[in-house]
Length: 377
Image (cartoon, rainbow, N blue to C red; front, side, top):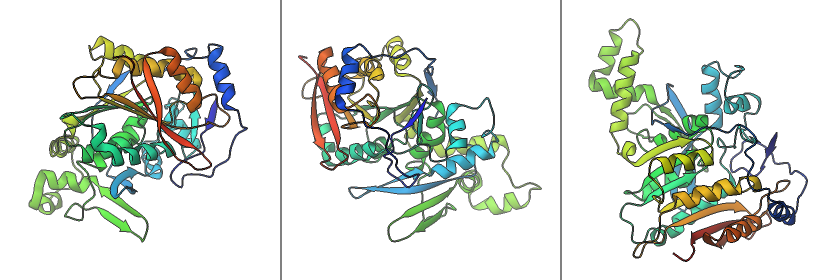
């Protein structure tokens, strides 16, 4: 089964709305016990190593928010990488790769298979803007905040924190391993170790009055990292100019070590229940000071798993520190069971967290940001 949210940020497709279901339908579903659908096979937990993509370059677009510029990989570039690897028509390919083969906009969400992580959804931009406006207040008392981004996808809010909260350490989670490898990690690298530059990097920066993009030349950086000023001489003397696999690996290692990104980021994939189990088995309960999540409450059947993960992951209050969860979502998900109201009611029914709406968009397609904090702790 697949469906579309139909509220993307970029120009990846047109919007067509499904039939409208009311908020009350979602609340009724909750009251009937429809809170945890585990009938299908779900993605296992997996820790994904931070590696530079095995491509010669990546193409990124600039995203602007509150005077900040972030770089985000183009969907077309992801599709080009998949095509290069001859996997688009592979019957054994993952759901993400198959979805990209048939829908280059990546707007389809396939329950328990692909959760839309390749596309930047509108509410993640809301969360990004909220962080930019309230960063100091959120991190009061924290010298080394620990952040968990659940359902991170393109990870724009986390990219902002990486750039503007120097001591923050982040764990970025998405349901799909391919999303982490094809979009999340490249986005992190494009804003850190591989950030576009007008210096001698080989990058091709393109700007217009309202857009900016860059073809980041990874191969050029690899050769420069290994050979420096002798690059042209060494490569020119070879029968084949390409780096050997061993040389490419060494270059990638040096590029990653040029920043502190390996010490600041970890990447995980899998279903929320499996992630929660892994955190508990590792003794990592209550270790995250801030938990972020966007566009993850559209289906009431996932509420229990999400709530249980939040209750496992969020740190307990200490001194003047106030750990919190920020949930960015549409007030109503047309044609789907979830809504802000139904999620708030579910959280209050569980009795673990206090929940309040702290931001509303105020337009016809209403969006909100909820804040969750521990109750009676």
